[in-house]
Image 1: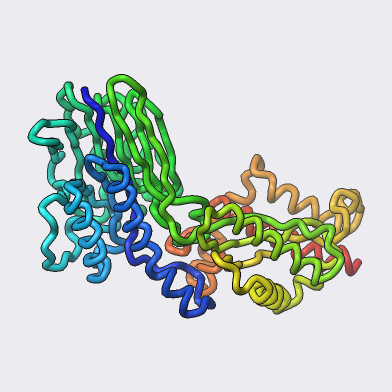
Image 2 (image 1 turned 90 degrees about the vertical axis):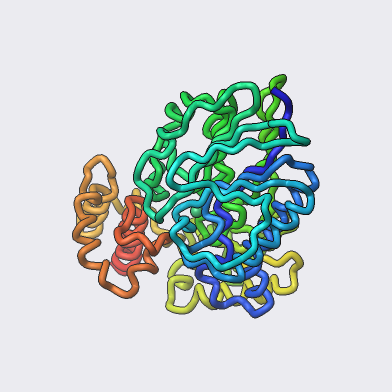
Amino acid sequence: MGTIKFVHCADLHLDTPFRGLSEVDEERGRMLNSATFQSFQNIVDVAIQNEADFVVIAGDVYNSADRSLSAQFKFQKGLQRLAEHGIEAFIACGNHDPLSGWSATIEWPGTAHTLAGDHVDIRQVTREGRVIATLCGMSYEKEAVRENLASLFPRPDGGVPSIAVLHSNVGGDTLHLPYAPTTVDELSSKGFDYWALGHVHARRVLRPDGPAIVYAGCSQSRQPNETGPKGCCVVTLSDSAPPDIRFVPTDVVRYHGGTVDISECDSQDAVRRAVAGACRTVSEDSQGRHAIVRLALTGRSALHRELARAGAMDALLHAVREEIEGWEPWVWPEKLPLETRGTYDIDMQRGREDFVGDLISVYDTLLDPSTGHLEGRRQELDDALSSWQGFRHLKDKPEQASVTSDELAVIAEQARRQTLDRVVEES
Ligand SMILES: [Mn+2]
């Protein structure tokens, strides 16, 4: 087989609103609104600069089935630029943009191919009349596809590199919906050289070679749990070397998560400076991107009670924002979760033979996963909270109706901390 080069991207989620950023000013708001579009245009630039033979998009081009018209125009514009450079695009629709969704009457360039949803679509990619690659893929016809689509893929013909494109949950990733489920073993047995996957928003190379099985990840993060660089993969396949999979960041704004240990801070000013310093580090790590940051304050601190007062953290957040205003690229502290503890020593308290000692022992049992006590309370908590308006504020993924095990552990840990903060220092 010869050598081919293509760009693999997925989960563009064009026109997604950023979550939880109602306090940003208009200019930043505009930038955030255009970030998913800009990242896609950057992917187009990457394809052109690298003289890619074609571009593969593994689903979720749009954020919702009723694709916004402006998203469709922007997508069309990018595909046209590719067409002007003779670069074809192959698109497999996913759960956010199934074929059954609304599509405007738009003239799509002839070089852009949406793959079929009722059978495995087999395409040949040509260069100067010669077949240089085979590409197999399938779109979602409807939003929820629970069948194993990968099992339908036929063995590719040998002779030229073969690429399979699918929006799929490989290996039962519990953070994503279980759509088009399959396994690394099954994909490996199919005879393709490269599986271009979409659906999981974190970039992952599940297998580097024989075949390469790759999630390109989303192209622009839009929420706090999508941290780190986002972009696309430039892939070179040849018969003389293993697959070359090069990640290229194309994001405009980057999410970071982190902690700031304030145990050495002896005043509110020192805390403010420590948080601003952490923002500076984030900025330096962001490769010239704007950054949105969620920094949890941690450590034991005599300031804990002061920071836990109503409104204190909001005031601190605004003070930090003011202090770092004007940075270019900008950093926006989105939230400062308070995870500090009072200055008492929990291990010393644990030995007490009174109410405090008993309370700590109850929480020790509850928080020990091996007892199963916490997991056993999950239904109760769901029943009690699911109809409560504030429920979504407990969660990073508000669209899920139930709290996850991780969220449950965080809630219980916070309950212990708040209870002990009251009883220990006042006893
Ligand atoms: Mn997606």
